Amino acid sequence: MSTLVPPVPFGSPFPRRLAAWFNERFPLLNALLFFMLFLASAAVVRAGAQGEIAFGPQDLVACLVTWCFFLVLRVFDEHKDYELDCVNHPQRVLQSGQITLRHLKVAGVLAVAAQIGWSVWRDQGFGAASMAWVLMFAWACLMAREFFIPDWLGRHLTWYAVSHMLIMPLVIWWLAQLAQPGSPLNTPVLVLMALSFVSGFCFEITRKTKGPEEERDTVASYSQIFGTRGAAWIVLALVTGMVILQFALMSLNVDMLSWWAYALPTLGYVLAVRQIAAFLKAPSAKARSRNEVAVALAMLLGYAAVIAATVAEHGLHISI
Image 1 (tube, rainbow, N blue to C red):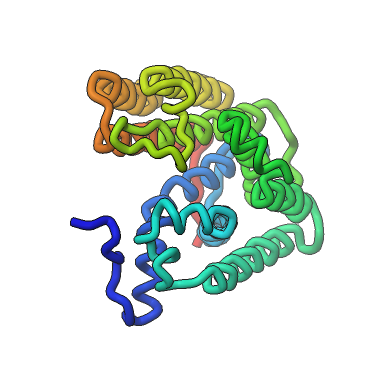
Image 2 (cartoon, helix red, strand yellow; image 1 turned 90 degrees about the vertical axis):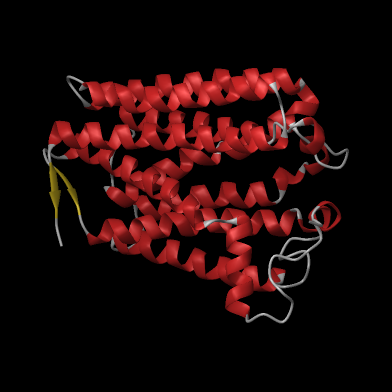
């Protein structure tokens, strides 16, 4: 099948074309990770502020607002990389003209409005959550402009990833303030920030460690910089660091970890290591795609373990 075949026929209704863009560039399945980020942040800060951890309808809204922020990051990337993607990926929904950058700009404005509105509502004015959002969004805007040094960052892909992944600790700080306005920057929150950075960095390198048949001169990858094997070993090191931080975060919130709290991150780690080892043995586009799934699963299981262990230790109250 030709890669130039559009995902949906031209002339399709706009909702179908927009849905095709989401499916291609911002799959709804990604929302699970974004929701986990907020719920982990809420569990961590509420464990330090109250006895029983309470979740309510406002947390569902916060999950959706979290998704809105990552949608804005995707919209920024679509604008930033549009011309290059027209060369490398002309078959995509956006590049083939089935939707436009203006459509995405409208979606981004609506998503930003949702973030501002919810932050101000949680503060009942302009407070900790609103200030955290301003700092986070300012960094996101710098990312969109590639910190005004696009050529240098383009030649230094590792520093590009570091500069962009630094958004993750700011995201965690914003989510913590949404969950518990005025919550302190304590050790568990700092460890969660570090976990989010390492996890994001790990996934970024994973998805840009290509199989030999995927490499293009016009598309930068870590496998070009470090070699296929070298990049894969870096992913293994980052996965190991990610799991260590997962255990460290749980130990800060829980006096005695149950066996299943160890089992979930360990399972994710084993699956990720097995898959990356398979990629090392026979690197390919298919194996690279499986690497992404395995690393994402390790991230999800780790965040799930943090949430579950914290709730099991402190108790859970759900309000309706």
